[in-house]
Length: 208
Image (cartoon, rainbow, N blue to C red; front, side):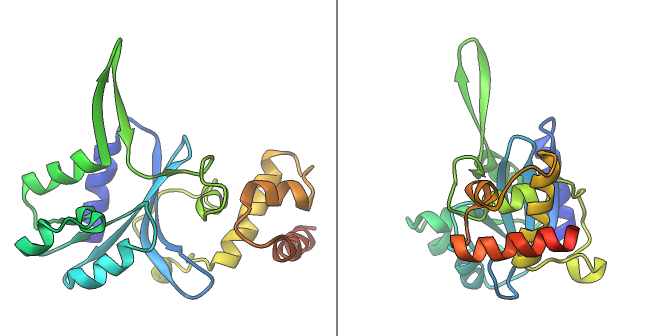
């Protein structure tokens, strides 16, 4: 289901340039989200997939405000009509067209504004989320291609620490390796300044 629905969502986002990256780290522990959709503009959202157990899926969706959940079973009426905002971000997919339409309407909200139609894409913009993980995703995966192959199979699944180091390298490359630790931390933030400084030193030592 994961590969099939990822391909469908990717099609819904066309013609917007984007990439989908599997098994991205959520935190310092061995905790990964199923799929990150990353726009060229810096907007992004995460999709968690489950074959069953909507309550477990709800717990994953509740971890941040840029995650939706897709489950391969009908959702009970009491869940579907729940007023809790998080339940509104869980969707059924069993192969029906109306299910795809419901996902599309949530992810890509269309509103009319003169002189042309505009669209709002669900998710967070890394430029507006200074304290979150978004900037690490954007810069860490700056040169990563789309994939449907999970990190365990591909051997490319990164921890948050590894992704942070990769983000530093990509950020430095974009600015010709001229940034000091303070400037890098002002972009990536997330970690405390002291921890970020240690990671910066490690990244630069490895690269040199």
